[in-house]
Length: 168
Image 1 (cartoon, rainbow, N blue to C red):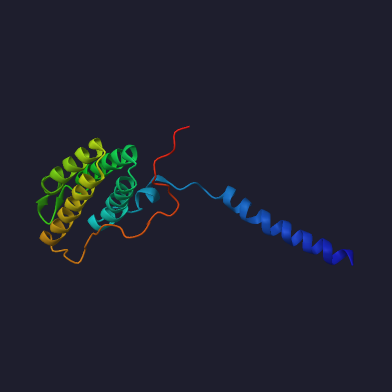
Image 2 (image 1 turned 90 degrees about the vertical axis):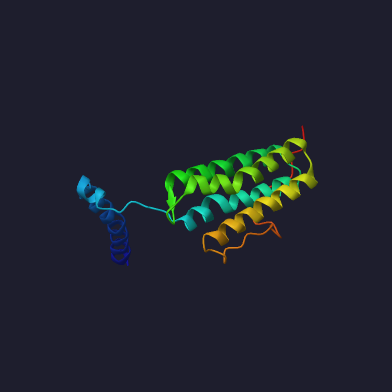
């Protein structure tokens, strides 16, 4: 009876130790194998989905809930995300990305900043709609008319509180 238990224990111990021994005995990767890995080059669609769309949505929720401090933060983050995209993809369809971005977003961003500073929900709603329309106009002009942005209809981030924190 003891022999099967001991055999089982040895089998478990071996299963746990062999991978560890194999890992510690293998040679570290050399520089040539590391350089053989391709660099990640996100597409414009990747960057829009990862960096722009979530900020656009969060900006809406902050303004809708009149959390002006957070709206100011998200507007800054949205502006910075566009700047990072222009550095990552300087040319898109043979067009200067910085020029396109500036032409499309400067006026709506300024209107949003004014609405946030004024703490005016109606002004914010109008400015947000202008930004959303500008995004869609840009998509259409770049032959991406199927990409239609809209005002969020339901909480897209159910794990985040967008209402302003109550003062202590």
